[in-house]
Image (cartoon, rainbow, N blue to C red; front, side, top):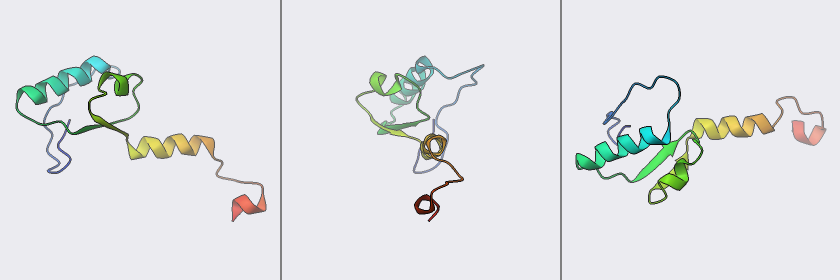
Length: 84
């Protein structure tokens, strides 16, 4: 987890396979214990994360937003209007 203003990493953890909500809970607890004010969470869309941390502002990361949209659109449209 990092500070979006300074870019400094404030907390990290080596994860074996996939991150879980418990990992996020651990990180946020660490930050709050050390006096940091968590303003929001930017995530890759882990299911249940938004409901678990409803008290924080939440945003889906831009990369994963683009990838989600890209799966629904074709790169080779057939219709003339779509090509334009």
